[in-house]
Image (cartoon, rainbow, N blue to C red; front, side, top):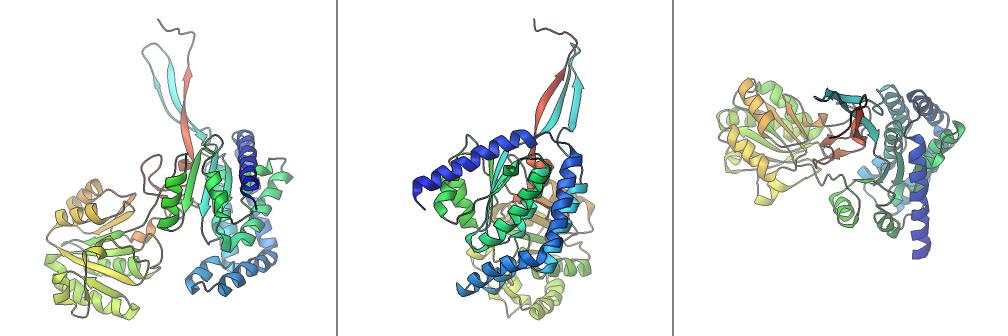
Length: 421
């Protein structure tokens, strides 16, 4: 495909998205919910067709030598399709944020001032192998009144187009603009570069994937970008922790799904309980096949561990590898997180209320937990329905992005004849 053709194609897509965004910004919650329920129904009815199309992507990925974990993320199974359908239904029953008046106050001159939630407009989402993101992103953007342009990875292109068409045909059945949901139909990287230049039509871009992709988008985009470079997540086990609870939490945080961004990468342990706790938990980690890289103190208690380097404290392993550091107190734990953390997810295990509150106040991360696994930094787990991604930037959202995070607010003012003097 020629460069000029690619440029013209993405400009046309962006123009159509802008026009569609104006039409869907104020449709009723009832209609939006009916659309989402209908898409869910179609996913279930057409699961065999979807699996057959997805098989083309999976076969190609296997031929290209992709790893098993990649193939697993790419594959549409009955379970994944059912999960997508349920996700749509969960988004449908969530409160619609559009039009909500979130605050009102009265001025001395009698003016009543408020803030009302409105859609952002057109959102571009750039993501990698998982085709379920297509449905999650489309449903959240549609429910929040936004048009969306979806650019998935080339490995899932057939699956993404098929899923997008189900959403588009449903919009058409409800006499809504089908261009409110568009899939970039070609894999060329140039298409993405041209799209990132279109700040006139696209209001926000959200990249989901590896650090390289996100940095590329952040460097090239002319519109705002919601960023999440990596998840270097910590759990700090305080001297007043319930050690059995700490054991369960730290095993879950590392081992349940080590390849995701909210898995624990570094364990911090107070020196007063380090010997007892580490001797116990080391055997559990050994059962799971976890490689431990520890500080000097850790190596005294876990002699089979490797010595951690300075680079290890910065590392997002996304694997069964764990860094462990023994700290003198909560202040050292917080300082370590401030230096090496990625503003993603941090947790403390403690029975001490003051330490818990200190950790909540002083640790800078999109989600901070007390006595719970880092794995809960997820839109579904936090009650947002699906999520469009996790933001580790503070403008305009911080943490999992659900429906509210896909809106902004405008000021509304009620008067009774006031004029400015």
